[in-house]
Length: 75
Image 1 (cartoon, rainbow, N blue to C red):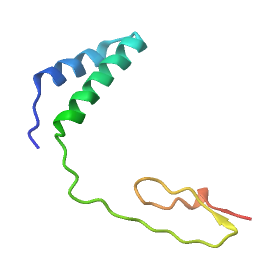
Image 2 (image 1 turned 45 degrees about the vertical axis):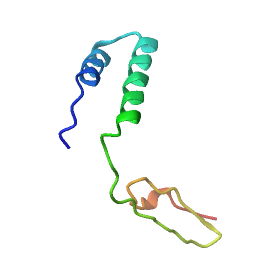
Image 3 (image 1 turned 90 degrees about the vertical axis):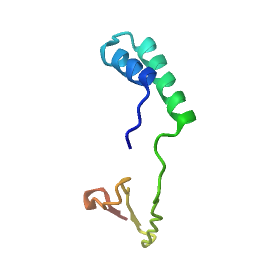
Image 4 (image 1 turned 135 degrees about the vertical axis):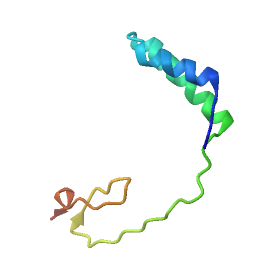
């Protein structure tokens, strides 16, 4: 995407070396706020995944849409 923002780059460099978690979290929040305003990423495709299962089956699905069968439970 060739997104470039010198302030974001500078903040990310600071995040990499900051050891104080409160200061680090504040830097990360600042980066995310800038990203939220500038929107450098435009999602072009967002799939809708529908799942169906029996009442006695429960499963946790991951965000990458891969069913890990060791997470399934049959009651």
